[in-house]
Amino acid sequence: MELSERNLRQLESEDFNEVYEWFDESSKHYPAHSHTYGVSIIVSEGEIEIITGGKTVLLKSGERIDVPADQEHSATAGKEGCKYIVGEGEG
Image 1 (cartoon, rainbow, N blue to C red):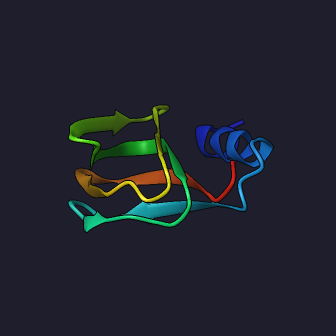
Image 2 (cartoon, rainbow, N blue to C red):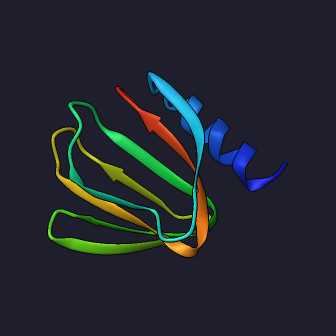
Image 3 (cartoon, rainbow, N blue to C red):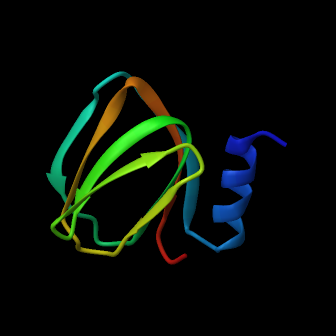
């Protein structure tokens, strides 16, 4: 089973309201924002830098971050882009 599929199944097993795969092109940037729900991200390919809670985290293949509801965060995909699985909602 490939990593994307394992990551997808992992988040689905945690009962998130929505689980999907996403791909960002090289250096795609998301400015600081927040959600009214928690978000979990597991990287399948590439890397992405997340800034949240006053910390900068560089996630690589197989790594995960959980961002609580209403916590401001920003993100920038690596130079090769980034494919990841997202879980949104209850989880």
